Image (cartoon, rainbow, N blue to C red; front, side, top):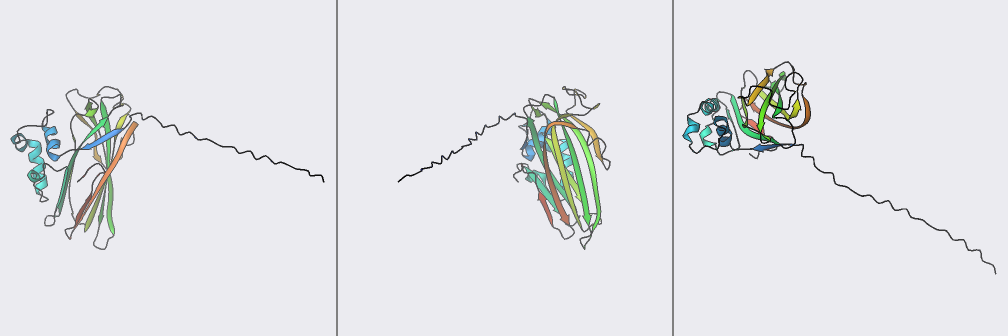
Length: 243
C-alpha cells in the first residue's frame, strides 16, 4: 500500500505591541482652592497669611465685599474658613457668591498668565419661556512670581432677579500661558512694574479682543448658578472647589 502524506505547516504571526509611556511636559495650569480668609488676606498684603484678623475687618477690600454679601443675607465673618460661599435673599431677590483661587504653572516662559471670561445670563418668565439671553466678555492679565499668580484670583458675583421669574448664569473661564499681539507679546510683564493685574477688556457685550489670545497651553473651568422668585437657588462650583 502506498500512502501519500501531505503535511500542512501553520505559521502563526505574533504581533507584539509595546506601550511606551509619554513623558509629561509639565505644561499645565494647576488651580488651587483657598479659604476665603486666605483669599481676602492675599488682596490686602502679599505677605499673607496675616497674624492679626483686625487687619482684615478694617480693610476696604473686606468691607466692600461684606456689604455686597449682606444684601443677599451672607455674613462673611461666619464663612472665612470656607472655600466658597453663596446666598440668596428671597425678599430682596438678590443672589451672591464668592470664592478665591490660585493658579500655578511650571513651564510658562512668561511672567504672567492671561485669562478670559465669558458670562451668559438667561432670564425666564413664570411659564419657563426665555425672555432674555445675553453674553459678556472680559480679558485680563495677572503677574506671576515663582510660577504662580502673586495675588489670589477673586470670583465675586452679585445679581438681582429684576423682572424675571428665574435667572440662570453661566460663567466660562480660560486661563493660560500665551500672548496677544500688540498687547502682551513679551516674556516679561508688559505693563507697569508696580501692578500685579491688568484689565485688558472689561465686561462687554462685544467680543472685542476675547478671541485674540494665542495660548501655548491653558486650563478651562466653569461654574453656574440659578435663582428664582420662589426663593430657590443652586450653585454648581468649579471642579477644584470642594464646597
